[in-house]
View 1 (tube, rainbow, N blue to C red):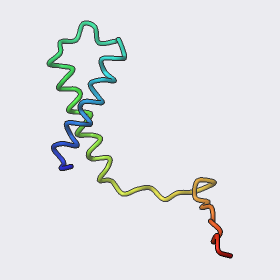
View 2: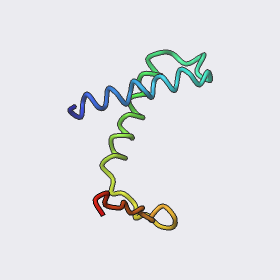
View 3: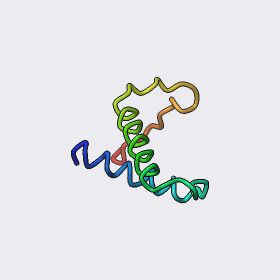
View 4: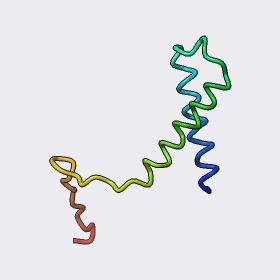
Length: 69
């Protein structure tokens, strides 16, 4: 999946969330679509960001035992 497809997919989900919220009854569809693509662009940028170091209980990794042992 290329970045444009991913952007469209993110925009689709964002638009779904915007329309489902019910607070946009008076907002024109073109504005909702524009807002969805703005959110999609933010999601794309968030994917490119460096992950924060895990701290606390989240940083604990479980060990798996070797079944042959």
